[in-house]
Length: 301
Image 1 (spheres, rainbow, N blue to C red):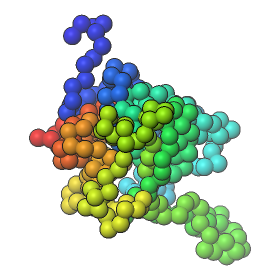
Image 2 (tube, helix red, strand yellow; image 1 turned 45 degrees about the horizontal axis):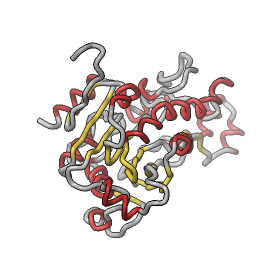
Image 3 (cartoon, rainbow, N blue to C red; image 1 turned 180 degrees about the horizontal axis):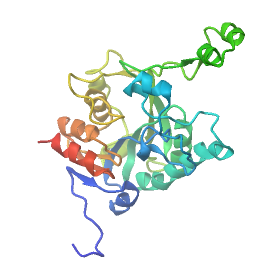
């Protein structure tokens, strides 16, 4: 390939690439579904830090975290932050989402869906970014996790370590942190179809826009927006934010037909792409991390 020639991304391939740049070389209206577990912007790992204000404690480990084990092995920022600059994290996350939202809209076929796993804390900023880019926000689905770690610190223990037993007694039963994170939101966006046209016309022209209820009922008892789906035996452990294949297959069959194209711009260990393959869809994936791209490719061997 000539160094000035734009890359030609082949279907059914996984590429090591920054999707913010790779998407610019995808044709307009070429993708039937974007399904992606995007970075949440909450500092899960270094690739999940999408703001500019850090300090020496961020992503480190406290004595309490070391004692708790690997479930909480990285120190995140408290919601209140450590500095005034931390108050801009949500705004910076919106700005990051806005960098790629326009290309997502451009490459999707009219009526096509974008299904996004997003963190509870900043999902509203993702919604605003995609709406501002031109998407219609269709719904929020809830994935109920089979297991969700919960380590809300007892505030009474903090006072005990300080020797303030009066405060420790007064605040018995109170905790610092969040409730157990049993559900994760899945944001459902659609690309608007032709103004003045109908969804029925769009389906005939572009093959997307409706949802396949009968396919959904293969996985759920009722056609509702609360989804179940845990990991199969020995399926997990490939990526810190890995999602179950069954869950991803549910979403793919809900919104696409066989042989249609599924794109994951942040594909990680490739679960979305493997699920698409199992559902007889074409797939295309990008991830900036070479190690995860190699893991994803190995899953197809």
